[in-house]
Image 1: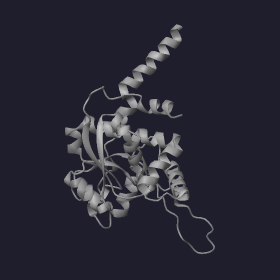
Image 2: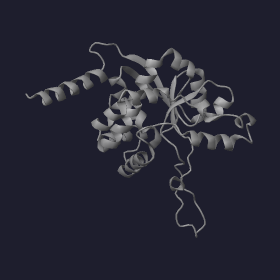
Image 3: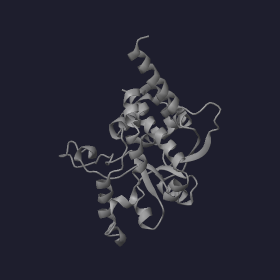
Image 4: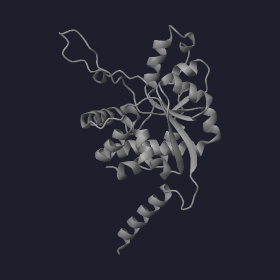
Length: 253
């Protein structure tokens, strides 16, 4: 084996070992909630079913919470401590200790039913940034369990990349959770996810400001709030510095 090939093999082996749980290591149990049976929850299901949470040392129980309000209340109570939820802006404005650490939606995924003269008005194509679904927790939970939150975030991010690369495997998982084996339904949901969800799932500060502006009439405290108050980008930034996104791009080209 020549020197270059030997180095390449060693680097690949190191990358595998550094991302895999140590043999015999006990997995850490954690609950992760989700509020809807919808395309924007696919990566949570895939991270569980494809063993990506487990890969980073987590024994994950997925908890279905019926609707955003119930999911928010559960997250505020700390059970489960991580929820793939819509915006946390209103809850934070009301004094709750919530924060977004990642986001899978930064635009409205809706179409408008309009007058006959309007032939096409897809909201995604209007270029309006708005903070939607994302992985949320509390700042206090991050402070106490940063390594656990980071492990969950790794599984979350890798699932997004996995989905883009593994269509058929993803659709099998979707059929299980969507409770509908109709190929047209699962295919449409898959295409919606691929179109909507960025591979670098950063929350959109511009989109949060949009929500603050919308809420300012109802909640006066929104007028003086800054988008940075609602996010913790430090974990995603750590993954960037450590080369995690580059590794994902190489693993799922």
